[in-house]
Image 1 (cartoon, rainbow, N blue to C red):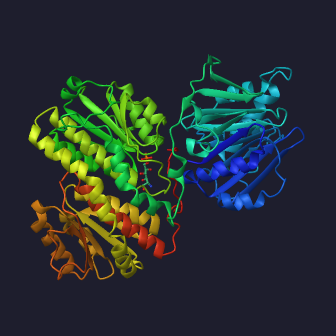
Image 2: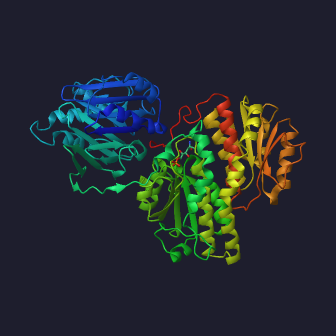
Image 3: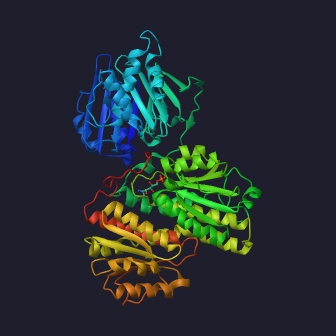
Length: 615
Ligand code: M6R
C-alpha cells in the first residue's frame, strides 16, 4: 500500500505532486508528506492525516522547486505520526526517499547502521532503507557521474522485502531515481518532464506515455534522459506504452461519493466487459487475450480460482458458474493461503487469479508460485499494464474503468460477468448445446438493462437503511451462489460502516450462529433462487421465530410473505448466470446508505487501502 509520486521537469513540483498524490489516496491515507529539492536546499513537509491537510501546509512558495517526491501512507511499521510519515531523510541530510513496501531485514540493517554511528527518528523500516542509501552514497567515488544511482543499486543488493521507491539526493538537484521490487512503479514521460508514480491515475493528467518498471529495475531521470537498468547493471531499452484512459471516468461528477457513482456505473461496466466478446454465431463468448487454444482448454480437468477479499468472493461465484455451466471441477483458494500451502495440483489444472488492481501482493505471489510449478495461468484484471496482467500467461481485462472507492462494487460485478462469459465459453467447448448457448448469450446481453433497473431501488433502500442504521450486528444469509453474495454483502457493510456483519450459508446458521439471533441482530436474506425457495423460507422462519428483523432480497415474481419479511427488496427476474450480479446490488446500496447515514467516510474507510501491496 502507500502511494508515491516523483517529479522532475520545468514546472513547480509541489502542486503537481500533491495533485497526483490525491489520486493515490485509495492506496493509503493516514499521513502524507512531500520533499522538494533545489540547488540550495532540501525542503520537507509532512502531516498526519489526508493529502488535503498536507496541501494546506504547503502554501505559497515555501516548497518551491522543480524536483520533488511525495507519499501518502498506509502504516505498516510504526504508528500514524508525523515522524513516521514519508519522505524520510537520512541522518546526514543527503538522501530523501519515499517507499511503498515492507523491508523484512530492516532490524539487522538498523543495528549495523547504529554501529556505524547512524541514529533514527522514526520507527519505520523505510527510514532504515533511506539511511542505507546514504551509507553507500558516502562510500561511492565522489567524482563518479553515476554516484547517486550506483548507491541506490548497491543498497538494493542488501534489501530483503518489497519496495517501490523514489529517491532524491541533496548533492544532485537534477536527478530523480526510482526502483521497484514487489511494489508497483511507473515512469510517466511528458514534454520536458518525467514523473514516477505507483500507478497511472497519478500522472494521467500530464501524460499518457508510460514505462512500467519490472521487479529488479532501477531508473535514473536526469537532464531529460531516462536511464533504465537492472540491479545487475544491465542497460535496458525502455518500452514506452500509451495509456488509453478517459480522465472523466475518474472524476466524481454529480455524485456525493465514488462508491455511489461506481454502483451506478455497473451497467456500463458490464457493457464494456462484453464488448466484442461474443462469437459471430452468438452462441458463445470469445476472449482475445487467453493465449491458449480451444484444444488446450478442453484438456483442462480442474480450475483453481485464487484471489483476495471481494475478488475471492467473485471466485466463489465463479465456482458455481463454471461447475454448473461448464461442468469443470473448480476449487477456490485465498491467495494468501495458497502461496504458503504446497497444494498438489494436477498438470491439467488451470490457475485463474482475479484482481481488480492487478497489484495485490498475495495474488501476485500465488500467480508466481503457480507459474513456477508450471501451471497454465490466466488473470481477470481491471488495470491495464498491472503486474498481474503482465505476468500471467493470458488474461481477460475487465474494462470497468477506474474504481476509486475503496469498497469494490463495479469491479466485483464486472468480474462476475466475465466469469459468466468464461463459464459459457468453457461450457460450449464441452457439453453445452447451441440452443443453451444462445439463451445464455441473450441473458448476458440483457444484464446491463436489468442492472439499470436494479440500481433504481436506491431510494427504497435508503428508507430501509434509515430503520437499521444503528444496528451493531447483523447476519447475511444465502445458499449456493447466494452464499458468496452474503459474504460480500457482509464484507461491504463492515468495511464502510464498521457494523459487525457475518455472511453464512443459510442452512448452516442453525449449527452455531443461530445463538446470535435476537431482536437486535437483523438478518439480511438472499431469497432469490426459485429451485430452493421453500428451503430458504424454512431458514427464514427459524430466524423469525427468534425475533430477528428480516430484510429479504427476493425476485419480483416470487416475493416472500409479509409475515416473515419485515422489509423486502425485489429485484428483476433473470437467468442464473446474471442473478449473483443483480442480487449483490441491493447489498451494495444498503451498505452505502447505512454508512453514509452513520457519517462514515464511505470512500476512504478507516484502516483500509484499496490496493494491498504488502503481505
Ligand atoms: O485489487 P484486488 O481485487 O486484488 O483487491 C482485493 C481486495 O483487497 C479487495 O477486494 C478488498 O477486499 C476491498 N476492500 C473490497 O471492497
